[in-house]
Length: 279
Image: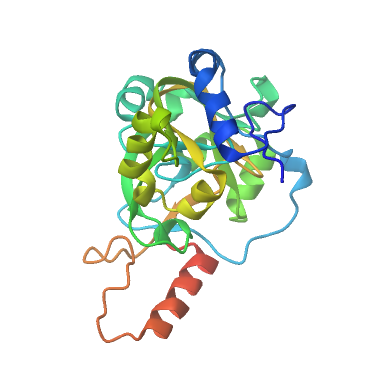
């Protein structure tokens, strides 16, 4: 069996340890490239998306007349083998509010503008995974935009919003601080194994991380110019949130708090939440 990694797509390794060794030997180069590269999702054009969702994401305690795109979530291993750590957006969210665009497909073109920076409020909110339609327990830090429905400039995006079609999002970003984590007991990976042991149980899709055997932990990133509506983000737990008309302040994240529910009843409710994307 040969092993491949995203960072060196033209290479094959006889063992995972050989792959880890090659990655570590090239850490300065990889870090430099990651910090220089403007990262965003591989996405499909919005015009390719025709299917209406079965459900609507709704947010308790959010202001009516606004939409709330979830641009990114933490503690999730994405298709780049990156895991965004809690706190990653603490600096940038404050600095970039009303300074970034809301676009379609990361296209920095006039025709792809959904909302202009003056109308895009940026903030971070801790929410449950289930509130975002993901059948995970616990919470994540969501990077979100707040945009008035009256300020939507793009016709196709308005149709998606008006029809409440299920959609994903993605952020264009620069990495600032990061670390390498490896699942290896070899002597040369003590620091990387310590990173792995410290964070692996906080990654909500840790099974994927364990299969790959390593990940890049991103501790700080800068939002670069925009966040986008996309068909398929590198992180797929990034829905659109619509305010709920009658919020329940005692249970803002719609968690399963009833102790009388059986496990099967809780699972049924979780599946329904995922289908409806209730927040």
